[in-house]
Image (cartoon, rainbow, N blue to C red; front, side):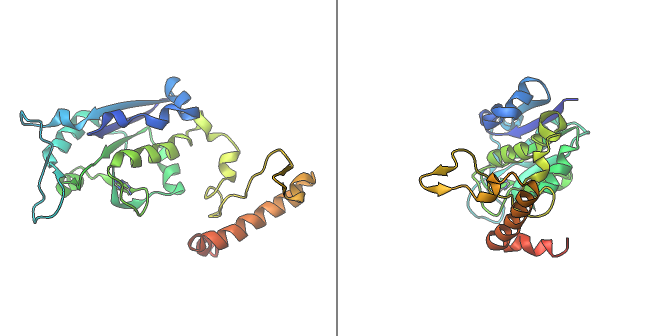
Length: 230
Ligand code: ADE
C-alpha cells in the first residue's frame, strides 16, 4: 500500500528535495510512497494573499494567521494520518518515534515559517508538535525532510526488511553504531583493526559490541545513562 505524505507549506518548491534521491527517491517513483504538496498562500483569504500578521503582545517576526492554516488543513488533510506540526517547541524526534510514525497509513505535515503559527489552530486541530532537535531552523521545511527521511526508510517496502536497520544506532539498544572500514587494508599508513581481518566472527562481534559501548560512554554520556536500565 502507498504511504501517503501530504505537506502544507509556504515553500512548496522545497519538496521533494533530497527525498528524490537514492532508495527513498526510487520508492517515490515506484509509488511506494506518494507526495502531495499544498501552498499555504492558496488558502489566504484576502485579495493580497496575506498569510501572516504581527504577534499580539509585541515582539519580532510575523505569525501565520489561524484561519489560513485552518482552511489549508480542512482542504488537504485526511482522517487517517497523524497531523504533525514541525516546531522547535515540539517533543524531540527519536528513532522510537520514527518507527511509530512509519506504522501509519501516511503523514500530514504542516510547516511553519517566520516566528510560528497561531497557537489556537494547533490546539483546535490537535496537531502533534515535533522538533528535530534543540536548535532553531528558519522554517519547518528542512525539519519535515529530516523527519520524512527517517520514517520513509523504515517502510518495509523501502528498506524495512533489511537486517542492517536493526544493527544501526538506536535501533536495538540505545548505543551508537560501531565504526566501519573497507579496502584498502592500509591507507596513508593507517591500518584496519586486525580483528576485522581475522575471519573470527565471534571475536568480531565482541569487538564491535565493546566499541559501541566505549564510544557511547565517551561521546554520548546522556545515552549511556539510559543503558543502565537495559
Ligand atoms: N522549525 C524551526 N526549527 C525547528 C526544529 N528544530 N524542529 C522542527 N521544526 C522546526
